[in-house]
Amino acid sequence: MKPLKIASIPGDGIGQEVMPEGLRVLHAAAERFGIALDITPIEWASCDHYLKTGQMMPDDWKQQLQGMDAVYFGAVGWPATVPDHISLWGSLLKFRREFDQYINLRPVRLFEGVPCPLAGRKPGDIDFFVVRENTEGEYTNLGGKLYEGTEREIVIQESVFSRHGTDRVMKYAFELAQSRPRKKITVATKSNGIAISMPWWDGRADAMHAGYPELAMDKQHIDILCARFVLQPDRFDVVVASNLFGDILSDLGPACTGTIGLAPSGNLNPERKFPSLFEPVHGSAPDIFGKGIANPVAMIWSGAMMLQFLGHQEAHDAILRAIEATLRDGPRTPDLGGKASTAEVGAAIEAAVRK
Ligand code: GGG
Image (cartoon, rainbow, N blue to C red; front, side, top):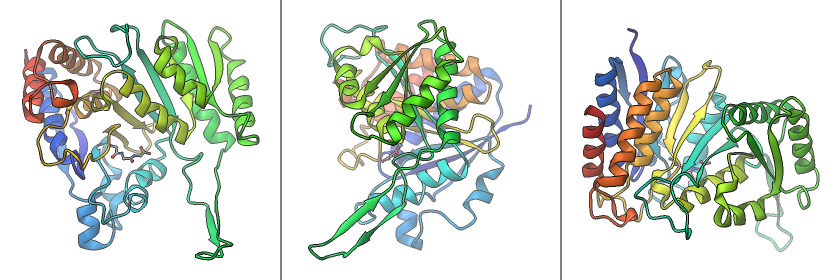
């Protein structure tokens, strides 16, 4: 069997601590299901690399990654001597744009054994996806400054919504909703306040909905949508959102399920013309870096999503079952009220995969 070629990039902060746990579980699943892995460790796409070389990634980064099946990524953005916009635009946002990873798929799920901060919720009540547009929207560097440093200072930053970019994320989200039993799609909007792009975004949702009449669709303003994530999370199934709204919702959603330390993501180029990238939703978490207590579940679950995307459903399912069992009965990191280390949780999940 042809090996899966995977670039592993730990990046910054706790990305370096959770990556080894992700890899040990990937290797365990690969051994169990007879998958050959060819993993290339990469030290660039990190602030350390920036501080040494003046750039986050080498000039030939794209060529180095082009033949890969996927990129397995930790976190970016520390130390603070490198401004966040430099580290993000110099790495993750380059991957997303230049590898046309136009879908950011972010599952949100409440697991058995995980204390839920929302009163009265049980596993099964919260189980949905945020589908985030990943290459345009509010994340642009179009704009500029006038009269900088004076009292007349003006700062302008544009948002970009293309029909091509919007229709393809809508299509992916509608297809995903169609494949799920509840057949429900929620469109995140703000068409009352953002009076040009958002009514247009809603119109593209209406046009897509015409092709999926069996789906129930509702459009919700982002402010009340955030409130409902907290108050009525059970009403969601698939939520489609612009780049910024999706980023916010996909931190809020996992926070409602106990900890953002569980939340995985896939930055997908569904056509597989370019490598897709799998990473935890969380960032580099400088506040806990170096203590060995970061929750590795988001990294491990992201690895499971990577195997699923590359066609290994059984391996994905085995990792998910191992995560479920460990969260139910196994060691926990402090974000879940436990005392276990990152490595202890990783080892428990690895052992459960090998069972
Ligand atoms: N592992 C994800 C990570 O490092 N995220 C840092 C971050 O700020 N991401 C912003 C984004 O996903 O747009």
